[in-house]
Image 1: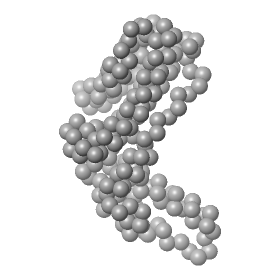
Image 2 (image 1 turned 90 degrees about the vertical axis):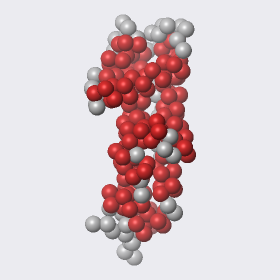
Image 3 (image 1 turned 135 degrees about the vertical axis):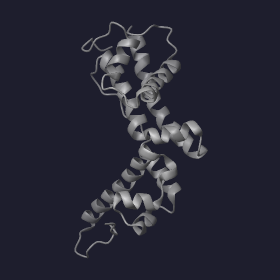
Amino acid sequence: MVVDADVEPASVSPRRSAKSRAGTDARILGAVLAILREHGPNRVTVESVAALSGVAKTTIYRRYANRDELLDAALDSQSAAPRIPDGLCVYDRVKWTLDLLRVALSSDIGMGSVSAVLTDADPDLTESFRDIINSRSQVAAEVLRAAVDAGALRADLDIDTAVSTLVGSYLGAYLRHGRVDETWADDVVHMVCPGLEPGNAAD
């Protein structure tokens, strides 16, 4: 059942109302991202978001004028790259980076959106998707430079090519098998950093 989530009883406090609004916003944007992951941007409509989120179309239209604003808001919510955790050894930092890229491709934008990027179905959205991937890629590049400094990777490594290779590794595994094994990150770390093991001292 789709309900108008903004209709609040008179007795509801402003604080509770703000919390309810934040929850409604999260449901709307969560539904947009879920549709993007599974089906790509062409399937994102106010109607499909209302159906998946359970939020009334009237409520959605009070926040967003159209699907383009919905998409922009959802992608903006994913644009900030997370901070590299403190205290990780070189091995775990590289593995964390791989997990960061995996989440970007599988969850932050999803394989449905990766398909839209490859076909450049919507040039404006393609740039937004690339911004998300590149924000994660910049973090990956920082981790790889630190691994070079620590001697875990060769000194003449081309960082940009290495990051592209890591992204391509995930896409290649998905294209070949329709899934990515849980051991993928560890397998890739062993390939790019031979001899490095979990628990090695951090740089």
